[in-house]
Image (cartoon, rainbow, N blue to C red; front, top):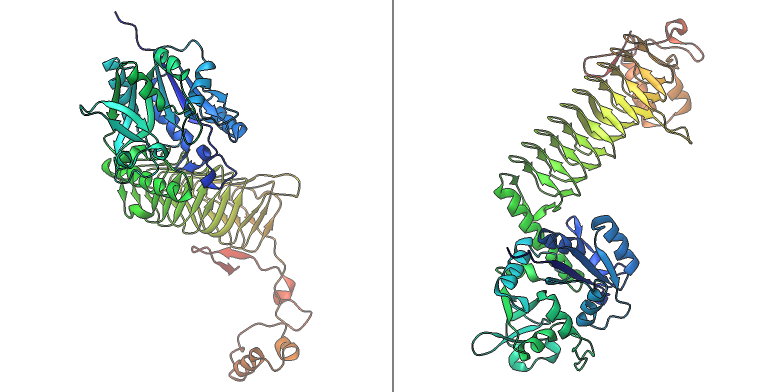
Length: 509
């Protein structure tokens, strides 16, 4: 039984990318959830190579650190001086001297490359027993790219860089995609014969093909089904173009699985995100990182979700979430901000201008508007009135607040942690609660109200307010309004308690 082919992947990631005009190495620029290098490594992963070597150079430490995060089994090899692609592959193989079988070489800036295309290249190479096989593509505009030069019989004759090409060769539209498969033994031999006799004064990996042809070795060309996969980038404009192409590919794939994307041109979904069937993604929406959207959920318009889980049939409208969980049937927004570890249970609600951080909002609980919830646990069916603040920070440490099941927090309340409001308890509007409220009790902290008769006329004479008050008094509008003279309190100084109404407003009791 024949032995399986041993495979080694070499990724060329040493270039500076001067035209990117960036302190960040070109291969580390992000593109819908992965770096350029990350996309290439993902395309090569299904080959199940015995080893992966990444040639680093410019920004080597940054690239090494990134590899530790995304591909810890890859071996970084330093190309201290960028002396050409042939030189890069030679030092890569020197780092793994026992390599045999097939060597796959991929440029590190082709993020649209599909795993299926890499696999087809390797299958064609190994199936034909070739010494080397190049991935080619027919492109509308070959400017700046190496050309595939064939003989009269259609066989590969050589690969010519544009700078070294003749006018006739430059007219060719079949280009070298920068992706190759080699027989390891014959590749090593050819690399030792490379010359720097070219305009760049570099060792071209593409010259290996001419050397192998001259030696009578079999070489092949595998043409990519879609030339878009072979596109690289040299500047920010080209990177933006690749981002749009990848956006369209990702959106089309999700729509074909049963996801509704209402405006694909303004919807950006990272390749690492997931969306289930019958979800609806409205315009101006970004699903980034490991975000997962459940079946029949509605997300958008104007939503950004980063590493966030949205449950089935939930709704997220005009909101921003990072590291959050939105339970099935829950409702978020508009204009809500879910920070890391915000966890919304089934059918809960976080409404307009509400911020939630490191907190659990229980099943059916509501935080409808204008509130901050930090370091809290809110029980099932609790209701948090408008302008409630969970005061969690004492200037040194964070503290936690617990609101029990079916508790009611009146509007404009501060819950000063650590504190607990018991199940079924009420807190009167305008209170600052710093002590626990027992289950079923009413917590209230509020100074008595007093009205000082004639204050506007004395202190704001000549204003529109004073004129309006004078007219109202003249019409007898204040006849039934209890007032107090300065220094006196309504109801003999008794405290007025807010009784929450069914709508969350307060009435006097």
